[in-house]
Length: 316
Image (cartoon, rainbow, N blue to C red):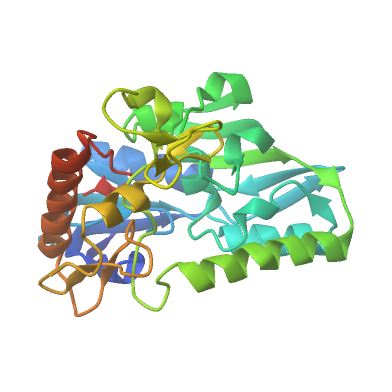
């Protein structure tokens, strides 16, 4: 049933990672349930593989089952679209352009799959996945049953959800997005503006997994420890900038830059000079190279600002 010793580097944005002992792509609920039952019979650990973004696989690989839920469908009912977890965000956006549906334009250029976006409540340009979710269907691998939640029960937070908090014990299968009717060309233009913005400002010329660290909510920062660029401030030139994401945050990229870490490298990995919240694979980097840089960035930012950066990265 399972493929064996499959290199995971080809399934991640980083192009990094050793082999999975077992690998399986589930295309429907029956295949997913059968794979989970077989893994339990073999006493295997399971990790759910989506689009390979925000994922760092160790150089040794994974001694268990890498399970990829390739639920690939789009079903429209009025302005609602039921989307399989395996659908890439780019494919969903193309569908919305074709069918003149608006609301998700902020996701233009966002990598990964719908399942990953729901799990991490992906967001950009002031928008978040949770703003459009009506319901989510998942599979509980401990109880071996399907679960359907309305949006409030998904416990969405800043780059978080109940699925992320459960640590992989529930596999997202699909989500229903509640959108609005829009103008085709307006939707297309807005999406492509976001795509071009990312191309210009993000180091997409190198293998990467997106932002390494979460931006820092103001609620985690002591007003006494640093000077913030808040409305009405008289020290704007010396203050740390604040942006809405969609809550007020201090950009992690700014903190990393101010800590003097742009362009710092270790092995084949480098803190991007173009966008320092990206650590890029510039020369056949190993996972250990990336891990070293992550710890360096955390230590330097903490030493300079007293702020502990939180990773967005899932480590396997």
